[in-house]
Length: 126
Image (cartoon, rainbow, N blue to C red; front, side, top):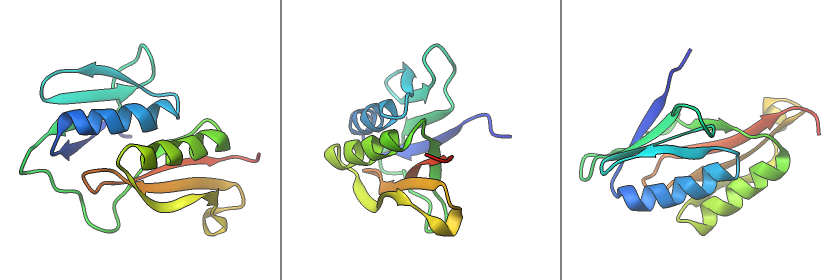
């Protein structure tokens, strides 16, 4: 259904540093960058997620919107959360099972340096 999604950010270098760290923990890489934006996806593939410099104009959506990245394992979810906290993100829900979403829904929630709510999730039995 979705081709890609992008977030506006205030400081591109800060956001690239953050997303390089958190997305690499999930197996994603920066597939392109220029002076105004960067795109992330699978190695050798196209971008599925991008960040775009919008200094002074960037606004994170309000409550009710978040972006969930697919994780390959529960360990990757834990690494995502740790990387986020070490690189300017804020905790919005530690790694763990979320029984309200299903018996195998394992996720962590963080807020990026620009206020975007993001999640890493795997929804398979351990």
